[in-house]
Image (cartoon, rainbow, N blue to C red; front, side, top):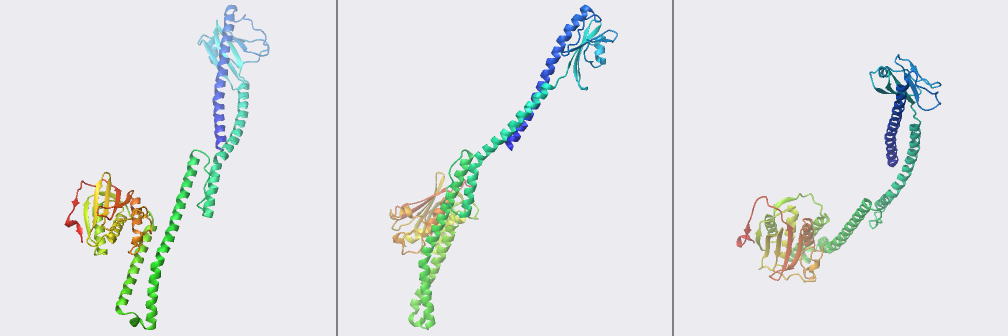
Length: 457
């Protein structure tokens, strides 16, 4: 429809312009011919006189002539059709008021173009009938051509539209099929070109991302079910033991006070472990979605807060800080959780007489945070999987934890455009390093805290 309409408008405009040009050209040619014929007749009239100039009988076609005598009377050839009366302006030419005059008379059924030229004491006139048949024939031809062009344009436009939109139709059908079947493994054939190809590639990329997201959710659910099974089973068995002994009335005799205390402590520890695991699972399942706003913050203040919180959770841990004020743009709670997880991980491995060392400095355009412990370090075989969910090295099986702490660190660091790595420290333990993009501070600030004042005991 758009193609047909555009062609129709183009043909109409072309017809209007062409008609005007053709009419102007025909009129100009006719007027030039009238002037030429008038000059010939005027020259003859001046030689022979207006009253004696020969006027042959009208042959039935061709120009019409008339001689205007000084007294206002006229002479015309025998058999010539009557011309319109001599106009007032034509009379002025005959009286010498004007040299010549071109007039058009289109009011009658037969219109005339009349040219009046001063000759001797009067004037001569040459006229032609206005013939619109060439323009009418031209208009009829343009009408036929226009109709053919409109019909052809509509057919071509329909064909082009169907051909061009065929990939879109198939893309729509594929998208509807995916929405109906929930089958994210579908792949839309990459066809077409230009914007259509880009659209299909974008939708295929979106389906691939959705597949990865679904797979990640499935793996998370499977891993969570596996990790929750052991503590839940242990907790259930201990609780069932207490309930069974209490019902028999043999709780005091079967479990001495010391055993009961140890069992209750185990129950409390298992509840804490489950609570921690559930909290970490919830935090991990949220992915990058967070309602927390991004702020410009001093990472040194955040590390101090995380170290203080770690001390309150594990009283025996000793932490030394070597911090330089470095500003970053990030989510405070998420970054503090990541730093706290790094400290907790180092605290599990560092000997009681060796502190966890935390260093923060600016390095180029990055804020570099290092958490150093004096533990046994990480085996080379375990390094590639340190940040995997639920992964725990063989040597860490007996220690508390869910295997999610470092994976949460990885997720937070990735969300902030940073990088987390692991290496062996100079003390033989693990050195966990986090690089985050540094931000411009609100004002020049430089602070370095070292020594005993920086130890959190």
